Image (cartoon, rainbow, N blue to C red):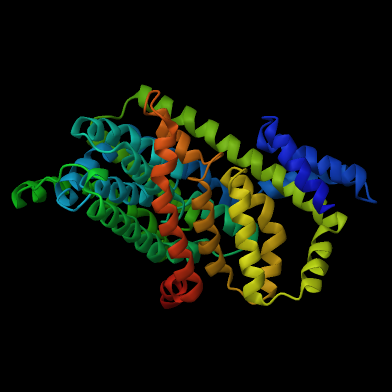
Length: 426
């Protein structure tokens, strides 16, 4: 059954059929060919149970908040501030790309929104100053991936929903690895530009009064972060309620920037509906597919297979991570999570791996899938802002940052406390 499912997923995805439809078709196929029970009769109840969750309301709220702050010009001003503070380092604006992505990630919860926003702001500046396109584009695509690791993160909410793991613990567990990965990205840029200065661009030195004057442009992102994460960890709000607080604060900031009008709200709401519909449709389809697979006995087959292989817990983890790397080449990240988690998570948790720790590790490999061709979404987001220039520049430019992610993965496996120290302390 596993072989047929693998072939079916790849074949249907290659036809260009939307992912949610692919998942439903696979579930119907499992019902027809591998199940002794009429699973279709449980379709309505299964979809209703999957959708009837207060936690899921956080997804459209975080998406809406990201749409509002993009249109309020907050990211553009933050980028200018990071330019004044970091462009003296080897690599110049590369560090502004990474740091602004990190700051924007702490409010948007979406890698796509982060990459799209920073591309729009940074690429014209990079072209104007004569930066080498490869590493410059790579820093934007890689920096955008931080949107699903640094809280709040839509993907962490999906992971918590699918594995019944505490969302606040996942949020705080992703904070330190996210900051460390940001540092690794910046160190990567410094090393490559120190070895070959032509990969970077001109370094600028701003005066201290100028730097201090631009700090005010970072304040809106800090206010949003404190409002969302602070309200969760002080016990004032659940993650869903914190998302609603974030939307209100984003509206206030947009009004303060004089960007709040009916046109902006209409565009933000329209994009929110489109994005949320896609995410929830995929989750509902994956829920029914997981139900069908469990009913058909796939989990038992996998358990027996891995038992026969007699893998150690570490061997099992490495096999799972290798599978995620391979799937990341072909499957969109959210789909990869909802397809694999119900199968691999019980096996890893039974082997003794911590739920919160594995959530951070999995998100790291999901991040990697965002910048690996042929389906790496962030690659296409950055390329869309380049108006016909070679796509190979974006792909090659992300390779050093993929290496940095692998280093981060090794650190998380060797030192699980990187992810667990903060949630355990709180």
